[in-house]
Each structure stands twice: as structure tokens, then as C-alpha cells.
Image (cartoon, rainbow, N blue to C red):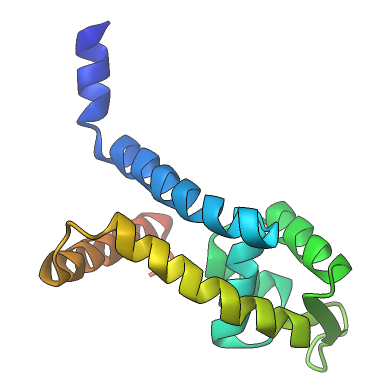
Amino acid sequence: MPSRIARLADFLPYLMSITSNAVSGQIADEYRARFGLRIPEWRVITVLGHVGPLTQRDLVSATLMDKVAVNRACKVLEERGIVMRSPNDRDGRSHHLELTEEGRKVHAEVMPLTFESYERIFADITLEEREVLKTLLNRIRDGVRKVEGTI
């Protein structure tokens, strides 16, 4: 059994997954305690706060979450008055989702908290190493897109 665990610990997709979960979980603890947000809800708020109004389909693409998770997050945020829907003039079957005034306030408060957590987690990684990591992660995502045939 130990040799199987050692091989798993060397498997980069597994290592990336557990690291991502650890980082996301640590940051999520901060905004969950203060704002009552779960990770999918935070992702929707973050994307809408940075990009502006989007359809749910656009949010699925931007967050890489499945349709059900995006739908649930949007529903919760809408019930809380953080997100509102407006008609999509280009497509009568969909709506644009955007932050309400309350949503913009939450976004303005949650982002500094998120960046503080990020800085604590990445404190031992230099700015140069962070840039290398970003470059490598982007190349990995490009590799996934190539395999999917989306680029």
C-alpha cells in the first residue's frame, strides 16, 4: 500500500487537485464565516464583480463549474439580494445576471479578505515563483483545451 500512495503523491493531477482544494478551502473559511458564502457563490460574485453582467452559460464557462452548481449559486445569491436577473435582448431564453448594490458591497468587502488570505498562503513563494506558477498553470489549461479540441 505505501508504494501506491507514494505513486499517487507523485501524480501531478492529484497533487494539483488536493493543493487547489486546500487553498480554496482555506480562503473559503474566511469568507464563509464573514459572509455566509460557499465557494460556488463566491466564484459567481467574483466573476460578475470583475467582468460585469453575464448569462449563466457565460458563468459556466468563466468559472469552469457545471451548470447545476452555477444555477444553484445564482439562485442563492438572487434570494439574498446579491445578484439580479435582467432580460437578455440577444436571446429571449436566457437572462443576464449582475450584482445588485448589495452585491457590489459584498464584492468590495470580500475581495480584500480573499487577497489577504492569498498573501498569507503564498507568503513563502516569491513574486518570480508566482509568475512561473501562473505561466505553468496557463500552459496546463491550454493543454487541456487542446485535448478537448477547444483550441
